[in-house]
Image (cartoon, rainbow, N blue to C red; front, side):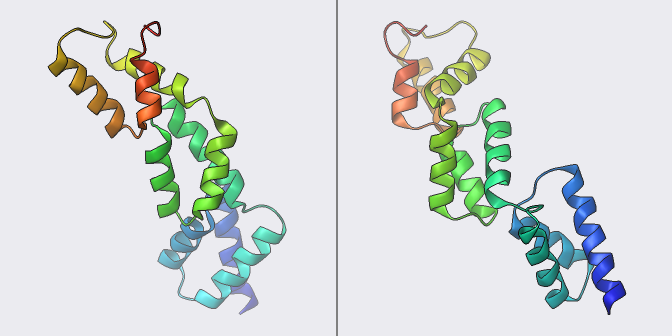
Length: 149
């Protein structure tokens, strides 16, 4: 039995060595590979105690990565909650990282290098793009403010 626990632990370390994972993600990956669910929970508890598995650290790394790819706080929040994080933790990470108006502007400029337009239909498409990327009203309006572009 101890050998199986060691196998699960080493697999968990292997998974975590590639990138940060949430506890929920790691448990799911281990459950796909191993049948001993009680041992999996023992291993994840040990990893948490050793600070090798940390949901907040995962949330920060994930948020920075997704923000860099042009996604907004609403979409990232939804994704993190789906990965097992509590909304309170997600809110604190999103607030701590901040800079969402600038992120919206960067995403907008990358997609629409010619900037804003006077055509209302095109403007609606541009705003919809930012909405679909997960930016809120405030971030979108900061992009379409008078002297931003």
